[in-house]
Length: 443
Image (cartoon, rainbow, N blue to C red):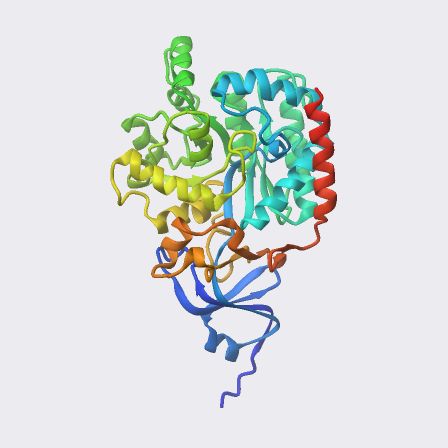
C-alpha cells in the first residue's frame, strides 16, 4: 500500500483509445486523461490514473477514441447564414455577383453574431474546438466566441474598398488596433491580421501589416494563389506572381497563414518551407469552386506546416472537419499519384496540431500533452460504420462521420455531452437562422 494520497483533479476521462497526435501516429489503448481547471495534468494508463488521482468527475468512454479537438484553420463563420445561397458557380462570379451583393444588404453585428452562433453549434457537434476566423465585424465575432466559450483566432480585416465595417484604409487599421486591444490577454480569443488577398490589398496596406504584425506578435491570415486567374492577373499587373509580391514586401515568414495555395511552383514550396510559412488546405471548397488542387503531399514532404480548413459555408457547404480531413487525404493521393501520400495519421495531425501551429497556438492546443489546454473530442467507434476496427487513425480518417462525436471539452469545460450541446439553445438558434433565411431570400 502506498502512503501517497491520490491527487484531487476536476476530471478524469477514461477512454478505450487516446490518440494524442504528439507523438505522431500513436493510439494508446485503455488510457486516461486527467484534467484540472483548463489544463491537461496527465496522460497515463487507466489503472495508474485511478490510483494517482481523485477526480471530482469521471467520464468513461469505453467505445471511444479521445482526440485533440479539431482545429478549423480557415473559416468565414458568419457566412454559415449564406449556406447554399449560390452554388455551382466559378469563384469570381459566385463572389462578385452573388455573395458580395447579398452580404451588402444584411451585413452587420447581428448577422455576424447569429452566423457565428449557428457555426459554433455545428462545429461542436463535429468535434471542432478552435476556428481561425476571417470576416468583417471582428468585434462582434470575438464577443460571440467569448460568450460561447469557444476558442478562436479572430481576423482583423483589411481590404481596399469601403465596407460596412470600415470606409478607408486608415479606418481599417484603426479598428483593427481597437479590436486587438479588446482581446489582449483573453483566455480563448486572440487576433490575426486578415488582409483579404493580394488582388484586393495594396502594397501600402501590406507594408503596414508587416510592421504591425511584428509589433503585435500576431499572424497574417490571407487567401493566396487560390486560382490560376488570380496568379495570371497579378503577373500582368506587376510582373510578379502574388507569392513573389509578398516575398518582396517581407510577408513570407513564419507569421504567414497562406490559405488555398492551389497554384505553386516547386521553388515556392521550398521558399515556404525555408520561411516557416503555414499552408491551409481547403480541399472541399477548392473542389466545389473548381479553384485547383493544393499540392498537399509536396508541401508535406518539403516540411511545410500543413493545416486544414473548411472555408465558409457559402462555398463548402459545411463545417465538417472529419469530412475535410478525409477529402484532404484522398485528394493528396490523387494529386501526387501516390497511394501513400498524406497518410491517415498525417491528415489527423494537419487537422489538429498543424492548425494550432499555423495560428501560433501549438504550445497551448492541438495535441493531448500534460500542460496543454484541455480541448478534447470523444469519437464513438462502436457504430457499425466504423466496425471492424483494425487501425484507429485509419478509421478516424477514412470511415468516421461527425455524427459519431459524442463529447467535447474546451479548456476543460464540457461543451457537448452525449451529443447534446451544453449551454446553447438549439431552438432559438434555429429560429434566428430561419428569420435570416426569410430576410435574405426576399432580397
